[in-house]
Structures are given as structure tokens and as C-alpha cells.
Length: 266
Image (cartoon, rainbow, N blue to C red; front, side, top):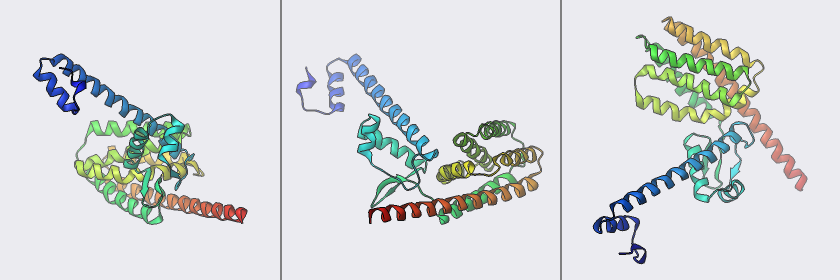
């Protein structure tokens, strides 16, 4: 029987193969479908990686509107692939869907910054104070994240520095032994990535961030949890202040650019 002559779904075709003694074909067909899906996902991941780099390096500025079709054509991929790539970045907090403007690069408001850092203070401080039982494996992971962060700062690779910085802080949350809180924390701080890259790029003395993280690790491993929590609290407050200032300056620059553009048109 030739299923190509039938108007039936993929599942129907597989059932026909089973009924007429074609298990090998059905298996090969299924494997081909799986490989095709893997290929599509991997392409979407690659496209997401390219767009992610453009966002985090500032090539795509906060608030920039992204159009699916032109972007897909410029990168030589299908519209579905571009849509999946944008979905990935939306889950990471780098893109946001606006009812009137479609997809745009995420832009943090002052309220966003305040709320995210409130969450960070509550969860990270609680995690430090909960770290009463030594966990050698977790401490090794924290040290590894610290060393990678230090190397990235010294190399002035701000995208990598922010990635390892957030990983360092994310590992602290594991002391709470609560997977749901870990997941909530990761989703919340994802929105900070772009803003933190801007902050680190414009930091007058980015090297001073290294001793702070190193001190946090040393106090944590020594079991001096109250001191560690105090330093972490100050670090988070300083970070919030710097981010709020940078985002405010960015909004002022955007407003000035819009006014300048309108004056040229008129």
C-alpha cells in the first residue's frame, strides 16, 4: 500500500506501516523526524546566541523593536526558526512582547530594578544564613564560578563576567534546598543580564568587584555567615544603585536622541 496516495496524517501513516509489516520503515521515519526536530532546535539556539550577543554587547539597544521577517531574511533562516529564537530570549528576559510594538529588546524601569533587587536581597541573604551545614561540592562549584568571573573581569569580557557573576549568586540559592525557589530566582534575575553588562562596562573601577566576591566566598567557607550576609547586603545595594543610575542615564540619552531626530525632520 502506498500511503503517499492517501490523505492522512503522519500518525496515520505510521499506523499503516505497522499494519502492513513495515516496522523498519516506521522506525526510520520516526528517527528522521527526530533528527529534523533536533536540527531545527539547534539552528534556533544558534540564532538565539547571535541575537543574545547583540543585545548584551549593546548592538541592539534596550527598547529596540525587532521584526521577525526582516531579521529572519537577514540571517538566512525561516520565520519559524526566528520565532523560536525570540521565544528563547523572551524566556531569558532579554526580549519582551509589547501589545502595540511586537517584540522588543527588554528595557528595565526603575520599579523593575527595585523589585528584582528586593527579591535578590530576600533570597540571597536567606540562603547565606541557611548555609550552616558544609557542602563541599557546592562550595567547589561556587569557587569555580568565582574564578571564571575573576578571569572575565580581568579580560574585560563583560558579557562573560555577568554570566559568571549571576551564576555565582545563583549557586548561593542552592543552600535553601528548594528547587522551586531556585527556578523562581533564575527567572527573576534573567532580566538583569543586559543592564548588568551596561553597568560593568561603565564601572569606573571594575576590578574592585573581584575582592568583594572573593571575600564572600572566604567568609562562606569559614562559616562566618553573619559577616558574609552583611557584605552581601551592601554589595547588592551598591549594585542596585549603579544599575538604576545607568538605566536612568540610558533613558535620558534615548529621549535626547528622539528629540534630536524630530527636530531634524521638522
